[in-house]
Image 1 (cartoon, one colour):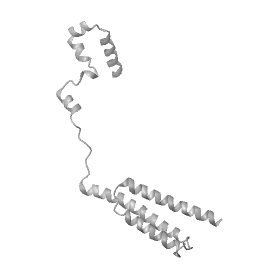
Image 2 (tube, one colour; image 1 turned 120 degrees about the horizontal axis):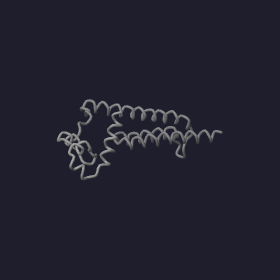
Image 3 (cartoon, one colour; image 1 turned 180 degrees about the vertical axis):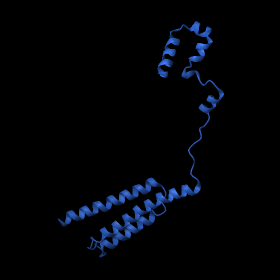
Image 4 (cartoon, helix red, strand yellow; image 1 turned 90 degrees about the vertical axis):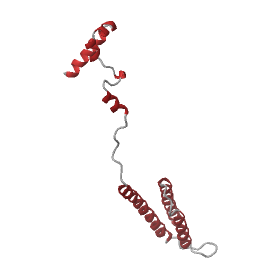
Length: 148
């Protein structure tokens, strides 16, 4: 009901000619357009000063959050490493030099994990983990196809 009365006042104000608005100060005060700006200094300051932001994390909370993220990434990396070790058991034949493929795969996996050990960029770590998982899956699929 209040919204209707305000709307009716605005409509009645817009019907009044501009000369009458200037002459009638009380009507001009009622009509306030959005683009005219704030009425008071407090409204001006509230609108243009930086608002109080969310409370920032202190160093301990930020470190805990970072450790949780690293722990989950570390867990995924260890899981991938275990998957590689498990999958390498199926490669029991030797290469042209006489080395077991199982040992070669394990050695190469260890070298790649050591090379990426101190990588801190989450995007690169995620890309490495996904690439490793895809490589293990495709190697196992190819091995399964050969055995069929």
